[in-house]
Picture 1: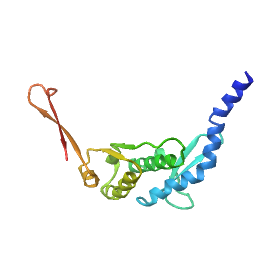
Picture 2: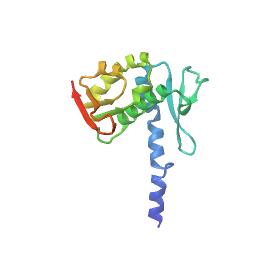
Picture 3: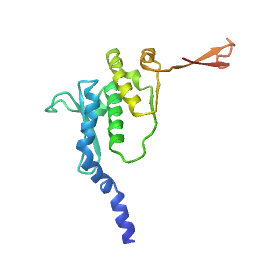
Length: 171
């Protein structure tokens, strides 16, 4: 029972995982903001609370007087922040690196200016992953992609809108 108790304490969120994250937190925050610095004016910071919960805040001023939880930020801030967090965590992880990176509808929350700056982010992702798959209804994203797959439905029967053929076009 004693060994099992030690095991449970070590894998608890206040155990080894918390100690590893605490040790790497400065590096993770640096990598998050290195990516964000290229495309937006805000910064994002992760911090560990005393109960080992991880909280994230966005801010514009160095003093952090305008700090807000990410949950209260805009859709584009949440999307870009989560993208930067994912990249930062993968960069410090010792797990095997995936070869596929998927963004599913994430860019739909971006305004036109941020979409233009995404070309930099997509290029960075292309350098890190063998394949980057972006799923979006926003047609301006096509300008940054090497290949596009367009999926549309052709309706043959006007009485029944469910009957039809899916057309796939690769360009």
